Image 1 (tube, helix red, strand yellow):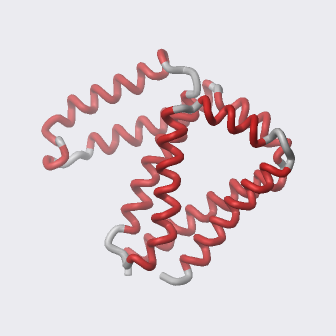
Image 2 (cartoon, rainbow, N blue to C red; image 1 turned 90 degrees about the vertical axis):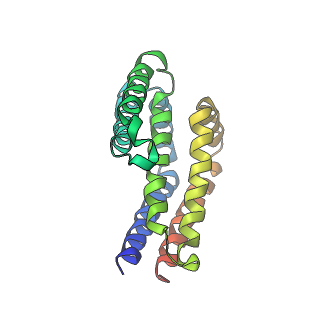
Length: 182
């Protein structure tokens, strides 16, 4: 019973995020475009997004068990902590996007854990959406400059943000509908 409740809450949270993103793209894309442009290279956004992702990842390292390289926990913590701090000084460009991609990947672990050991029919929609997010996050995290190009392309014509926003809102609606069948 608890597993189904966690899966339901995870699905509804994901649906809310998708519907909210779709709503902002549909409602006021002209307002959104300069903010997306600024976010791509914002140092403040990089501090928050990459900082949250770094702390979250270091938390996972700090709680590793013996079966998961737990005996090297301190060395891994120092290595990845140093890499995170170094990224603020040596990889400043598009660090905010990399931080968001890392947060999405870490959030995907939480969402997939909520669907673990649930019936296949119940978790299929959420898991499919989450794996799609994983692919997009890895792609964007590895080549964040392509997100800048995509942003330019998206806002060149007024129909494109509406189509993307409608698609995101539809995925969110599909998640809400699928949650009623748990």
